[in-house]
Length: 129
Picture 1 (spheres, rainbow, N blue to C red):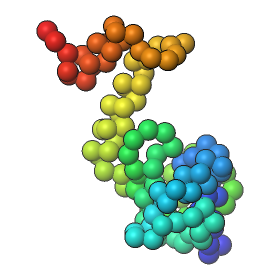
Picture 2 (picture 1 turned 180 degrees about the horizontal axis):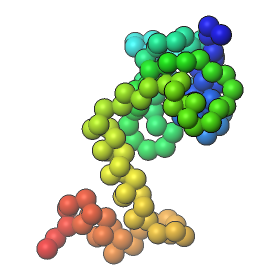
Picture 3 (picture 1 turned 90 degrees about the horizontal axis):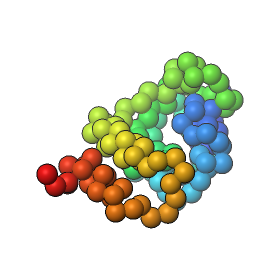
Picture 4 (picture 1 turned 120 degrees about the vertical axis):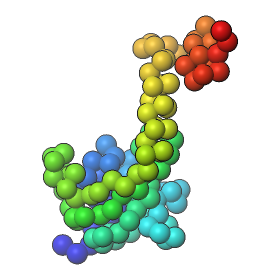
């Protein structure tokens, strides 16, 4: 196998839950290989360095293609097919974002209350003594 569709590979190595989500990420020109913008139908070759957004939340991830697969495989095989080169600053930002998102209680909907906003401000270091 010399080439694989980008959306198929992103799904197969478990970077996106569904192939449709992988294709949607490619739609807006957000997935790039160097300066080249990749479409979902772009052929992927081994050794390429891909910059793509996270499936949810802020930041972009940097991934190197190590193996070409077109069928969904288990997590250990998926880890061997790609190398994550995402900078640690981006991962720290994602961790903060995930923690802030977890502050929202299950079942909460809509606009946060005044108390919730204060709690979030304290969490981010903007609170009052």
